[in-house]
Image (tube, rainbow, N blue to C red; front, side, top):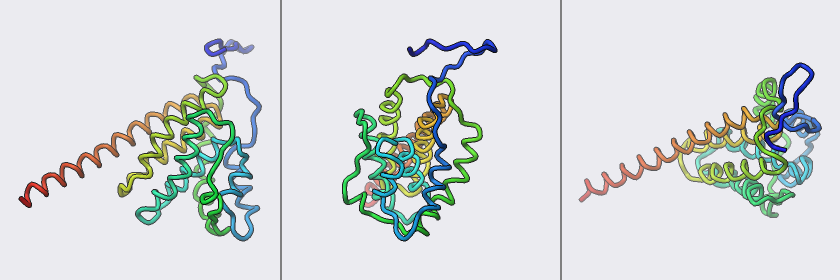
Length: 219
């Protein structure tokens, strides 16, 4: 049960629940890029990752929103993230995406551009990430992270210049924390998430004040 830590032979306590360790996200994404031929749809990516793999989907869709893209792109790319986070928050067991999203495709070259940016950064993070101090039991972590990611994904879809990068980064950290059951990374991702929302609120508030002052100046 939560809070009952297992003592090891060395006298240390392992606060993370035992789980079978699978392939790391960097290896999964690198394999996807190597196997990509022709165009690859969002549905293909979802099916390859597995319909129950919420954590990889969070990381991947968050990574899309961290790339330097034209203004307004986050309104489109943030939608899959919003849908996945909402399903996690409501306790769904399978990741579902509507057809108009799953049928959208990237060329193999475009997908490799994304993974070439994502994979090296994931590898660096994975060198220090490991199962430890995970504060949740069973599926509770999925729901908590889903709720946080849902709030962040709403801010990602807002048309705020450069306002989507920090919440997308926080979402990627939370997805990686969930994948590895790393409580420390979960705490870091949560702090970054709160900071990103504070920045978004400051930008929106500043824009509102500036607009009000401009209208008052006009008369």
